[in-house]
Structure formats: structure tokens, C-alpha cells
Amino acid sequence: MNEKKVVLQVDHLKKYYPVQKGLFQRQQQFVKAVDDISFEIYAGETLGLVGESGCGKTTTSRAILQLDPPTAGSVKLDGRELVNMKPKLLRNMRQEMQIIFQNPYSSLNPRMMIGRALTEPMVVHGIAAGKEAEERACELLETVGLDRYFVNRFPSEFSGGQRQRIGIARALSVNPRFIICDEPISSLDVSIQGQIVNLLRKLKRERNLTYLFISHDLSMVRYISERIAVMYLGKIVELGESKSLFANPLHPYTQALWSAAPIPDPEIEATRQRIILEGDVPSPVNPPQGCRFSTRCPKVMDVCRQTEPLLKEVETGRQVACYLY
Image (cartoon, rainbow, N blue to C red; front, side, top):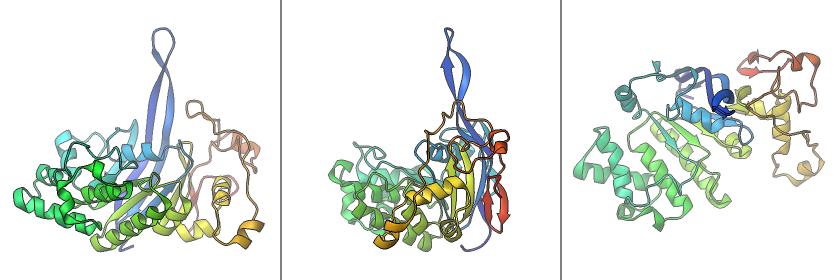
């Protein structure tokens, strides 16, 4: 981390989706995909965002970038409010923030040559045009470990790993400061995942980038992130430095999540105790009263079922939403 300068500030972010029910399609209920979360990301750091499928990680990323405008809350990039920003100003801000999508097979236009996919953002944002943009596209391909002559090929000619490298090159084409990596390795072979994560780390150092790295692969999140936020059913339940979070998880959900992650040492793996959670994840349409995790928590108390615990700092740099602390 270069300095404690806040690049992204998220405050009380909510994203609710209406569920239409009844004869006249009245909007009676809402899916609370993201429900009042707050965090910040500092310049030059990677914040990992982890949690089970369906907990709201991708919705958070889309709400931050205003691809899916939030229901409520504030999102500030370098101190500038993005929520309800005028479309023209927001389009200019897109140069500062980019996203690497989960699926490299659907994120590239199959009818567009790679060169055009890389030069088009440069032209739109007035960074480069003509021969200069073409040369920059070739340099970007080399930057992500591909041959510069791939500019004249179509996405169908590449493997998943190569397409994800092209997706990374496209995100870099407008010289952003902040990039959201939305499960960028989940659809790739295990042998390729490490290469992509190492490429992201290298680019972060060389270009002074700031990442929000979303994944359910705990080992990769631990490897790439300085800090980690743990999400459960639309809420952040724990946030802290990567090393301390893995060494001593505080929230019962974080403990259960960590216990499910495999350890490469066979002796430790054979003897360690796993925490098996009972029951299913509650519906985000009708979440439980009090703590969202109270229906599955092995350490649940009466207060957990009545009042929702707030995310508060329990030690330096560590926040947790739990009545045990």
C-alpha cells in the first residue's frame, strides 16, 4: 500500500430488486441483494470480497460502477459522488474505473476483431486514434503476455485464459486507476488461474492500480489481497487485514468459510476440524430478524435473533458484526 489515500468510499450502499406478486403485479416485496454496506479502498491496495454464491458480491460491483444504479447509499471515487451523476460526467469517469468480467467467453464481442475491441475505448475517451491507437493496442497485448499480431484475430480463435488476458488489456486501454476484478478466474482452468492472478499483481505494481477483487476462491483472495471483506446475505460481517483475518477469523461465518478451504499440508488437512453449517441460506426477500446468520450460527444467542449487530471496530483495522465481541 502506497499511502492511506482513499480511492473508493462506499457508504450505506443498498440495492433492492422488486418482486412483483399478486393479480395486479403490485410490487409488494424486494430482493435485498445488497443491504446497507460500507467500506473503503486505499490507493494501491487490493481489497478482496468473499462469500457464498448469491451473497451480493457481483451486485455490489455493478452498483459501484453504476452499471446497475443503487437503491440508496453513496459511492465516491477520488471524492467524487457517482450516484445520480449526470450521464456525460459519468461517461468521463469511466476512464478512471474499469471492470474485468467473470466470463471471458461472453465479455468480448464475437464479431469484433481484438484490435478494434482495444482501440474503441481509447477513441471514445479521446486518448488515442488511428495509428497511435493501433500501436497502443499492440503494446497492451504484449503487456498482458500475448503476441501483438493477435490484433487481427477474432475472440473465437482464443482459449479462455487468452480471452481473459484480452479482457484485462481492454480494461487497461483507458489508463484507469481503479479496477474491479469480478471473479476473473472462476471460469478458467486451475493451471491458468495462477498465471492470471500473477499478471494482475504485476500490473498493479507497474501501473499503481487499485483493485476490488471478488472471488469465492479463498486461497487466491489470500494471495492477492491486503485486506478482505466477508459478505453474507447482502451484509459485510467482517473486514480486516488478510493475514490477521486468516490467522484468527472472528465472525462465526468467517470461521466456517475458512474451515471449508483446503490446506495444502496433508497432515494439517487430515486433523483439522471443519465447521459444518446446518440449514440453508435464508431468502434475501425475507431475511431473518436480527443477525442474518442467526439461523445457521453455531454460537447464536437470544440477542442475535432480535437486534441486528452493527459492523464495528473490535481491534485496530478489524471490524466485525457480531455480539460475541
